[in-house]
Image (cartoon, rainbow, N blue to C red; front, side, top):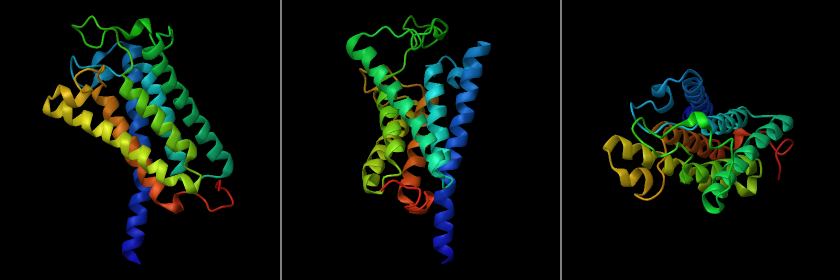
Length: 219
């Protein structure tokens, strides 16, 4: 019916739109670090900046999501899953740094500087980013397995909630919504990107036609 066609069209568009916006946001942030323009890193003046490694991880997640939103071939599914696995590793490394004190030079970049212009706290990825990378990467990796779609939806909904709640915290200036009051906070642009990725992943997971049928899906 016409209503079903419109619904399917909206569900197919959201993952691609979320992916494109996230990639653009990541490029802007990386340009901010390369050109030493603080506003491009954080969007909000003097606010917490998105870490460059976070920008790369978000771009990888977005590329994987875009691929899955275009009825991919088996090869492209494997490529998207490879991108997702990289982000899972990134999330695990962030956790390892917080839990075990791992010294990871590529995560603690000298160019990263403080989280804000007047802060002495080094810029490092938030544990909330680690959780979001793990869940997004996991959801994208197992997305082709139809029997695991409910788990994908739970992961996507959680990531969306983390991002959306943090964004609301910035809008309403409520610190407890941004970091829970005790965790290192997540940057506003990072939170927005995760909200987009979570919503896109949730959309592609509930629409079975977004992946090819069993010939190219893992059952």
